[in-house]
Each structure stands twice: as structure tokens, then as C-alpha cells.
Amino acid sequence: DAGVIQSPRHEVTEMGQEVTLRCKPISGHNSLFWYRQTMMRGLELLIYFNNNVPIDDSGMPEDRFSAKMPNASFSTLKIQPSEPRDSAVYFCASSLVGLSYEQYFGPGTRLTVT
Amino acid sequence: KNEVEQSPQNLTAQEGEFITINCSYSVGISALHWLQQHPGGGIVSLFMLSSGKKKHGRLIATINIQEKHSSLHITASHPRDSAVYICAVIHTGNQFYFGTGTSLTVIP
Image (cartoon, rainbow over all chains, first blue to last red; front, side, top):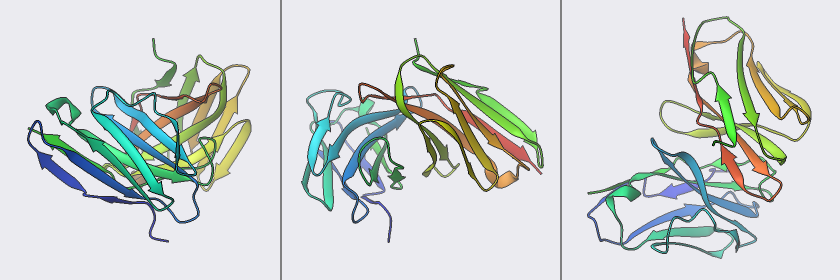
């Protein structure tokens, strides 16, 4: 298996622009997680899905952030409008089922908002 | 107040040394993860624990639920073990809390 795939790997955009990050989980995994990592706040869980359904989005910082999982093999994290404080590395991970199983992380998307 | 505290924050060791990284938490948990983040940024899940002890190669992870404490041990450390090690706990309310990480450097 190719592992968790994220795209793009790097994104540079201007403040106010819409940003869409993409993730393809490992085939057969039923849970998908979006994380954000910054120097100031470390690693944070933004949202996770079980069987394509959002279970907990309490980590999503504000309404500018939204995540979807239209099918078992694809998820997006959208930021609209983007702000400089959104600059971070965004990781996607997947697991067989839920939080209490081993998670496999994608390589991350490094987002820079100028 | 951090729900998860790791120590030490930074650790430098000579190759071959036995290394221990500690994680203490203040909430009731259903499971605990140890993650490894390499200098290039990639994250690997090392262990998921809910009780007892697990071993994988030179890595050993233990957890004491009563004391709310977990340790990650590395035997016969090697420069390729240099990374940031992150402890993360799953609160019984299904929230995820992360430690700030321990930066390990193993010198040849």
C-alpha cells in the first residue's frame, strides 16, 4: 500500500485566498484524522471521521475551516479565507477504527499564508 | 495547565546508551500513543497502549494507569533514533491531548 497520501506537499498563498488540502487514506481504514502542527501550539487534532462521518470537530479553530469526506478514499480540509496565522503543517492520518488504533500519518502539507 | 507533560524536553545521549522518556497525564484515558517525528517532519506511530507494556525491537513502552504515567525506553540507542518523541493521550471523553514532545539527539 502507498500509505496515506496528501497533496499538495507545499502551498504558499496570499491572505484571503481559499486553500484546499487533500488526503487519501490507506485503503480499508475506516477512520481519518486531520491535524495541525505549529511551533507555538505543537500538534493539535482538528477533526476526525469514522466511516466518512465527522465524529468530533471540536478542534476546528473557527468557521473558516471546514472538512469533508465524500467517500472512503478521499477527504479535504478547506480554509476560506486564509490568514497568516493558519501557516502550519497539516497532517492527515488514518486508522482501522477510531482513536484507539494505530494511526498512519501522511507526509503533511506545509502551508504558508503571506 | 497541560493535560500531558513530557520530560525531559531535550535529551542528548551517546550512541549505545539506554534512554528513557517520560509522560505524565492528568485526565482519565482510554489509550495512550507514542509518536516519533523525524527531522524531516514525518510522523510515525510507535505504540498504542491501554495497559501494561509493549516491545518493538529496541523500543519498549510501559504504562501505569493508576499512576497516570507512561515511559518510552530505547535500548542501545543509535543516531538514527534522533527525533522528537510525542506522547498523546485519548481522554475517556474521546478528546486527544498531546505532549509538547521530547527532542532526542544521539551522538555517534
